[in-house]
Structures are given as structure tokens and as C-alpha cells.
Image 1 (cartoon, one colour):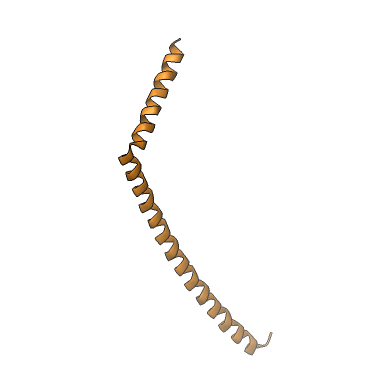
Image 2: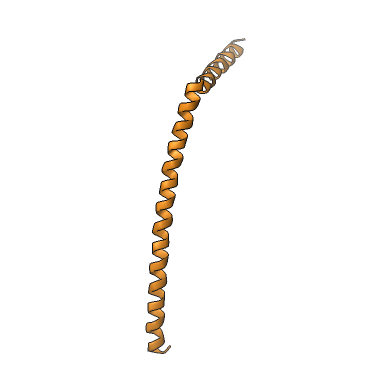
Length: 75
């Protein structure tokens, strides 16, 4: 391979590497922002469900199912 072409190829590859690393940083930052937003939305959903009594009802259903399974085992 011609040394002049090698130097040009190396510069080209360095520029591509820099562009790819910048793209990686931007995408990583965007992913982090979306993960934080998802966590906030899930917390808000949990708060809303708690306020509406949906979570408590589910816990009570689980308790009644446990009682039913215990009483059926005793029979």
C-alpha cells in the first residue's frame, strides 16, 4: 500500500471514529434521559393507582386468595 494513501486512510478513519463516538455520546445521553422519564412516569402511575385504590385492592385480593388457599388445604 502506498504510504500517502495510508496516511489519508488513517485520517479518514480517525474522522469516522470521532463522528461515531460523538453519535454514541449523544445516543447514550438521550437513552439516559428517556430512562429517567420512564421512571418518573412509572412513579406517577403508581401514585395515581394508589390514589384510586387500585393497588390496595390488588393487595387485598392477594390476601383473600391466600386465605382461600389455606382453608382449602385444611379441608
